[in-house]
Length: 606
Image 1 (cartoon, rainbow, N blue to C red):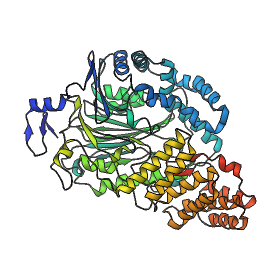
Image 2: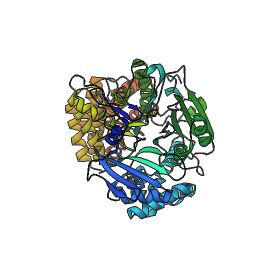
Image 3: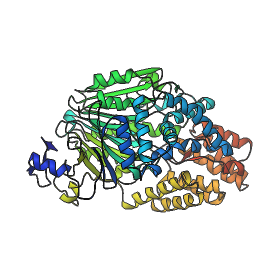
Image 4: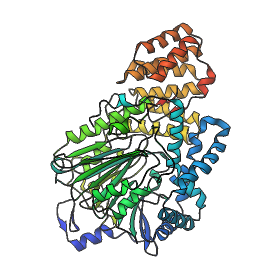
């Protein structure tokens, strides 16, 4: 907590403003690298950077100071990501990627604002990198959405409305204020779930921006990620987070690329009316939601949009909390979301319900620690992957307290929300380890508390180890294309967490792809023994076990499983798969071509 930069110490005493400023802002000797008005240091594995000047100068400073890290960071990863998305095309994937970058990517690039291009030019010069490579990485999010939209149209899935019926209104935002919080001040927590599990957390950056044009602000990003349009807080007390909507048929080239408009909001908006006006002045390429809060007025703007429609949802007194996942609340926008992947929609619905349930449950006593623990929530015990807020692709986690100008940033590997959070002050423009320190609690010392928030994560140590093995399997399979290591890590995950049905489901899929039919069948039998909260997942397990039985020549047993799946409540794709299985046996060639999706341990197109 801050009182005009006075700082509460763990024993409850208050340092003077001058002493507090020194304690908050002075880095350890020898830990900081300076470059003109800019500097860089590291805190608990996080890059901490101060940038000041014109857009080109701030890009140059970023490039020079983080030159060692940018080539292995998210921008390089994203520049190659389209090829991974196009992997089902086989040998044609590299050619398709180049064609898309030279058409779709260039179309996105053409509409980059001048300030963004100037910043990128500075970054390329400072880091000694190819500007074209950086531009390809920067246009990836919008280009990827365009590709997914074309696949969605080709697949002709129906609207996802039936998975929205339980929503009274995958990143997660949680906001609480007024009577819900201990001191009445607004808190805005956010998990950023995105691609780059193996790169983003290792290159996380807390960047203090002081532009020649506009206000100071702090963004939570990564080395090579330049702008503050995704997760940020400005000196007027506004916070901003973004949510992506993947499965929709409403992506249109020619709009403003993602990440740039939010940066304008952070530099120029003093309140939510000004933020909304800036957002309305730009048409997006894809489908996004901005959660923007005003800490001084204790209000929330949920701004949902696609290229054809923009909707502003406001929350303030008498409301006291607001939770959001990646599902549009506006009915017309919601009707454009496509039921391409039912497991995804059920998880979104579950996460939305869960975050609002936790905000309601803790109402009246919420502080920054409570918000960190909400971000670290692992859902119900029946399934770790179904309705948990802390997920496989949680690559960044923050808690903002805008009225005090404070942000707590999670450290370590994904899911970052399970780790310690470090405090940073926008006023001091630096690490602020004693902000928010509270008296020691049982099993947790004052020294630990002074280092930052330490969320209490549910489950035993073996649960975390099991999730880590699952995450390592994902990285081996997706980034390294190493099926052998992925299988081995999933065996470890299942040994550490034997009661998690979807861990066994994922193990079964990997074994099936590797041609180990007996091991695969045993895994799906385990799924059926354990059960699952969603009957659709059990129907799917029957189909996969039937396919294993087909492959080993047990046709009559396979037919029984296909019929059991149809007698249940299968998802549409699984119903078609079961009917196909009744007509003809499954063959090994199809098993080898499985494209396994790890976040929900499923196959999008089975």
